Amino acid sequence: MIDILAWIVGNAGGIGWVMLGMAVGGLITPRFSLPQSTDLATWLGALLGALVGLVTTLTGLIDTTLGASIAALALLAVMLVYWFVVVPRLPYRVQTRSRLLNRTVYRYRFPNFLGQIVSHTILLAWTLVVLAPLWTMLVNSLKDKREIFRAPFSWPTADVRTFDGYKNAWIDGNFDLYFRNSLIVTVTSLAIILLIGALGAYALANWRSRASTAVYLYFVAGLMIPIRLGTINIVTIVQDFGLNNKLTGLIPIYVAMGLPITIFVLTAFMRGVPQDLIDAARMDGASELRVFVEIMLPLTRPALATVTVFNMIPIWNDLWFPLILTRDENVRTVTYGVSLLFGQYQTDWNAILSTLSLASLPVLILYLLMSKQFIKGLTAGAVKG
Image (tube, rainbow, N blue to C red; front, side, top):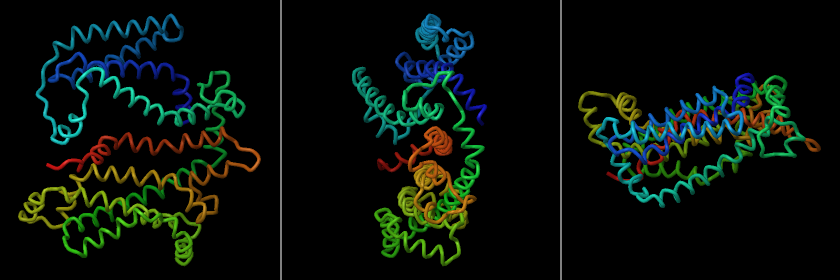
């Protein structure tokens, strides 16, 4: 892993140039294409821009100022030929737009060029605000302590770049043990939350009575009451069951913490599933379990992805309960291990930032894998019909 990270950092300029070519080809191409061929033209433009960026990187043009200027002109020339010669000749394709997108995305699109400039400027500014902490964490994880305070926002040059923080975190700091503990707790908790939450939401969505409303409001009330208010009682219960100083003592707490939002989101989503679809399956002889597994779960994948992301972040980043319930070295989680790096008189910022950079990877990977379903889950139910 250290070797892979070193290769990425050492080739950051080339990777950035390839991504810039992809962005230029993908974002500007829709301005030159017809609506019937926008998707195909955009993908081809992004691939062509990335290919030009890769070729100019491999030839070493971006290593000098003059070479970078030539590479930029080459990218512009290739894209101009693509936009004015290739794009008008692309085949048309009939597009099918979903009613959800027609009523949400297309309602708030900006038809004029000035409106698009303003909207993209706002989105770009927000993106920079979000990425600034990640950038600071990443670049400072590659510096020693003195360089961190001297130039905290600059990219480390080859003479000051160091991977000691990552080596110390992975080899000497037992990060692999902490990472495995956090992974076990998070994955197990999420699996139980999704199983119980999906079953409970299916029951509440099909059970229409005052009692079901009361049960639903009981779970919703869990969103308003922080679980940390019951820390003393939770500690007593964990000790009574003999789960103190064990990873299994954290899992029931996280399940209880994640069920309210899971029940809330999945119940609202399942109530939006057409009842005729469920009745047709029952008339064909399908049992309730088969209806749930083969019909309801596939239709609620966006909502499941949403609650997975919502629940993973607080579970993975939690420090409160591991700090209280786990003491031994072999049951510490990542956040608990990072907290031990903060000293009263001295703090190893290089080790802390390196550990945090590694600890943020699972959350980023999960979001990238589920981003499409996550966005669908957020927008679903925004409009009716």
